[in-house]
Image 1 (tube, rainbow, N blue to C red):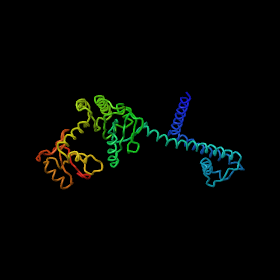
Image 2 (cartoon, rainbow, N blue to C red; image 1 turned 45 degrees about the vertical axis):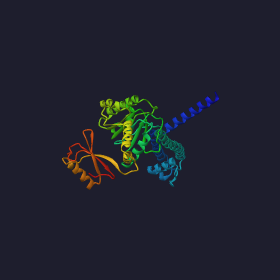
Image 3 (cartoon, rainbow, N blue to C red; image 1 turned 180 degrees about the horizontal axis):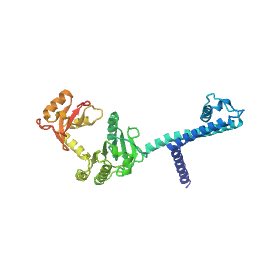
Image 4 (tube, rainbow, N blue to C red; image 1 turned 135 degrees about the vertical axis):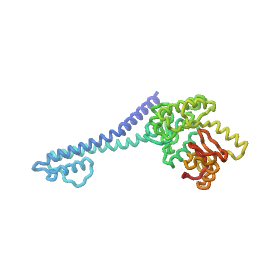
Amino acid sequence: MRSTSLASRRYLLRRTLETVIYWFGRPRLIVLVLLITLLIVVLGATALWITEQAMNGEPEFKQWDSAFWYMLQSVAGISVGAKVPLSETGRVIAIIGGVLGSALKGVFTAAVASAFVNRIIVEGKGLGDYKLEHHILVCGWNNHAKEMIKVLSDQAFGRDVSVVLLADLTENPMPNARIRFLHGDPTVDADLERAAAAHARSVIILADESHGPKDDSTVDARTVLTALAIEMLNSHVYTIAEVRDTLNRRHFARTKTDELVASSELAGGLLARTALNPGVGHVISTLMRLDQSAEVIVTPAPKSMLGKSFDDVLKFLRREQHVILIGLCRNGSVLLSPNGDQLLTDGDGLVMISNAPMNL
């Protein structure tokens, strides 16, 4: 019974402390303190200027700007060698200004410190929101998300692209990574708006297991709902969704998902092809690993290449750009190693293996 009472007191104390930190850390309070300080300085300088007009007053304070600088130093607590008031009323005004200034300095210091602490708490718990554009939004969380986000954040950071993770987790699962975390439900419009989904350049929808493993149908159904919610906010964003059960591909036909990645299909296909053709696994791993320079690039075919044959473009790119053309993207399909006389048409994408950035 005593332990329960002690735990309740600790909880109440922690909640009270968080409330105080939140209240002091509000930007409005900092602005309000600064405005009150300025008001005290102006009113005090005016009162000092009026009182020191008497015969026994300080002659220097007969100029309002001199009174202003004195009140400013009195409130700030910094001496700049200004004259002091000589009249009794002027000295009382100076003392009141100094006392109020000391109190306001304490409030201002607490407000600034609380703002920093509050920001750390908010970011760690994912309770804020972000005003971003052209960022990559990752929705959901599962057991292989860490490795994906690690690669993604390193690659995106080098290209000055922000990465935001929106998942129903209590705290940031990767506090040391270069990502911005938001606690929320990717199927809810309000949480997507906090993640600036309407202004994202691309969205990755993971097979969500943030509440623990579930059957593939339930996970894929949630992915479809997330895709529909994103489509309502931003119909032009490029969306990549992870699907668990390949039979559920048909459900995504009702969404505008640009690419579907079947994780089980990729793993199974890679294992089977490696068993039949040893070395394939090494090749794919090299292309996917972050510490290797070679990677697969897909880029729109320049207008200067339209109408040329695949072989001609392959030779040109190998000679001028030192890349290897391996296929074309056409009408949502990938043509790997097409016929050499295949002509490039408007809208084609070039699938290449490159070791360095390209300049087409």
